[in-house]
Image (tube, rainbow, N blue to C red; front, side):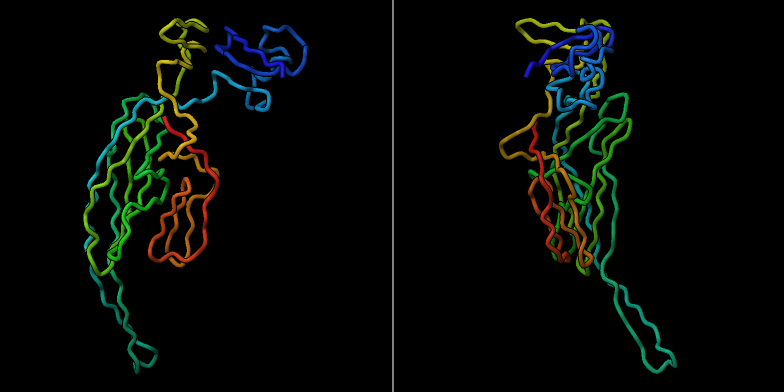
Length: 259
């Protein structure tokens, strides 16, 4: 494979790729031969690296402990009448539901970033179970806006009170890089290097593929299944099942990643 490493100043691009042919100038990003550098998403089979790819540069990596409040148990009696008022039907509704939005952290970036959160070596996806017992179950999900990262918890109790619990979450916030016009297209010395005018910098930490066991996994398919009024969540091969679930969901393939 005859792979080239080229830099194109006007486009702030550095890329390692296989040319599509020999048409056009070798250093013109608009030349047909350099199409993988100009439009990498259309030529992924020919691109080994591109400075414009999103490389998950870590802006924040910290642990946050939250207290999830207790959810009171209880039951409410109901009754009604059959037609003719000759027979009475009674039933009970057990427990309560609570939704709480927790502030995980203020990220300090001037935009809404991508984030990842892990709990007990499991990636937090929408519906991750962080408390599961006879008294009830608590699910969480993650969101972010231009200022903060949040964790939303939804829990339900039975006739018993679902106890308050402390849970510790690892929060990763990723910076969206932009080219710095004051930097050269490529530069480096014994202490480090950068290219793409700072789009990639060896002094930064990046998310990477991890062949060992990792609490962070990029799932490649469905992560949650609902059956019999219950849920099963499978992420990174870790299985969480609440007490009402009935089914056989096994999850999907995944890619282990870490910093």
